[in-house]
Length: 165
Image (cartoon, rainbow, N blue to C red; front, side):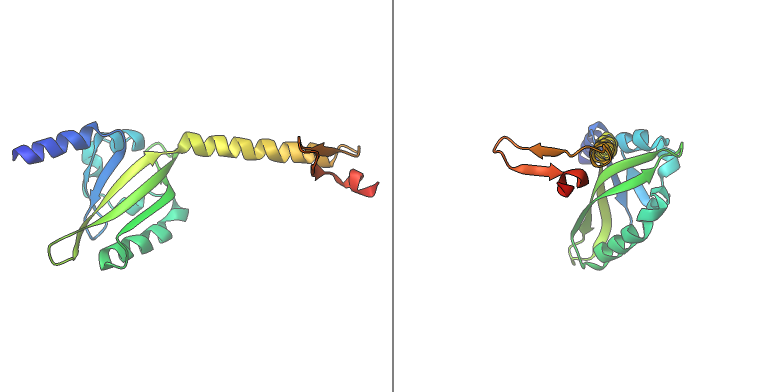
């Protein structure tokens, strides 16, 4: 193994983000320890595994289309929030960046992906959404005329009872 290869492996394995390399047939050629850890797989288990098998079923068709476009040279990069299914079945929300690696002829020879776990953010967003729905429901169904007045004295929200006045 060359010195450059050893340095690349060290960088790959010390990266905080999950990193993988796919061949043009969607098989995982390499994964780093961060990705394996997040997905709860041993490194050997992911070798030559089809990457689409790790995705949430609702995300597979869009990912398949993007991979095809990258391989055909119709796009160079792709970024999307996507769901992976960990080995234990838990959903891992991730920010995925995928790029084509081309040879000297400009043909795609591999794809490189960077996976950043955004599960905590997605869970916080969902918690906030539920809280807002609950607040809106209480506001609308209180039976009392209610309004929200901002600092500049504009009415930003009113319920149906207030509208009847």
